[in-house]
Length: 258
Image (cartoon, rainbow, N blue to C red):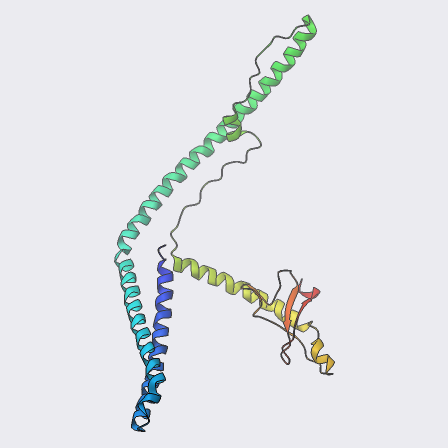
């Protein structure tokens, strides 16, 4: 499956970091090898160092090839941007036409509702007259039931919600959506931080430390929980706590945070 541009960018950044780190490690290995050679130590004892150098150099070559391939792919994306912009313009035009059709459907639904209500009313009248006819001569008129066509009922009966207008479409790149998600996450974390402080203010002392007659206030374990609510369990107001002194963990409900 083709990766998105954002994923290619992330992979390229990771590859560059790994390449930089590996280059530093190889320089350190080379320095050690030079020191070994200048000290005139036995060459056979240098085999592990040489093997580590060989594996590192092969890995560095693989990273260089990967980096070049990723950069080439991103250049293709950049070159294709004008054509992609044309596609977005076409979608905007098609979206405009779709909204026009939906507006027409809204109008047709509104126009159809009174006709369905009229059919139901006339059916009621027919049923009443048939009952009166039965009372007069002891026979029904055998009138065929004029039902509201199910297609019309599904479209515009009184219990069918009104069709909502479509909102205009706007293009948002993966980068734009990622930025929005990041901003939303930061807002949630900012609000959640207040609850963390409240949880720590009402957290109990560590039960393990208390056994040694040491009072240690437990803290929220921020490595637990979801991304937007670190430290909190799946139950609202229940917290994963950890002792900063002995490392003991505990899950505690703190009503003040609910």
